[in-house]
Image 1 (cartoon, rainbow over the protein chains, first blue to last red):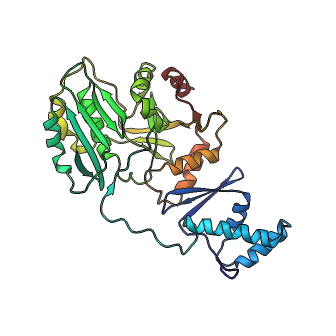
Image 2 (cartoon, chains in turn blue, red):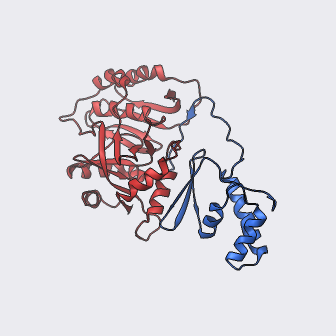
Image 3 (tube, rainbow over the protein chains, first blue to last red):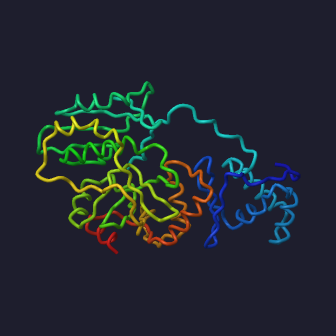
Length: 108
Length: 246
């Protein structure tokens, strides 16, 4: 992701914020993701309008941290969010065709 | 092994034993599928009145009974219980325990030792549901117990061919029951209080069908906020019964 990119949260990502924690439920995959405090701050500003470069600059100033460190952390976090299909524009999962095979629950 | 398709889900089932095995295979005929299924279930029938009828799911005995009606009802509930839940319900991992009209959700790991727990719980007035998943209405905070599918009577010949016990087993009747407790597996060795975040994350990640309703995750959170929840170690039926009662 470049500093000019403006990432946005995926429409199917439902954010739950309570008791100081942030959970994100991705409706397409059924996966739940727990964000740490920094991840929560970044997640909130992924509005599709803020460039990554500006986001890094703001975070570096707010937390008085070296922008290079923040850039590395934000880049890593965005890559994880993209992989988890939590960002808008992620490719759709292959549509379901035919019946579903029942999978067994995990073994004891 | 039989490959069956029920409500869009392909299920592999092996049938063995004595008694009405052929009747069961005949009753399952309309569900036969051309798809190759995993081996999910094993049905063990017996015409010996001292031997239990058994339904195993992935190596766990999920139903063990001498009551033919309960057995065929439970078999139908398992076959019909893997599709998409009714609108407004979440279908998640666990076992429903009913005491009177109060429902408690117990961890799915209970199935690993279900026969040994079931008897002890029953003597404490607690009946376990035979359904493979737990259906909950997070908006009302109720556990929904589905009625057996209308085609359950296809198994009438199977039930008729099995020995009749002195008394029937109690079963959880279909309906909606207020959810009073939700217990999860103990993670690790320390019995630390479970946080609401942990509980919500565990419920949402254990869903059998992803939630399409955008309000669903919030409803799950609010429901758990109003419910007693925690993690527990499954040690003895008596201890578990005490936990459910409190």
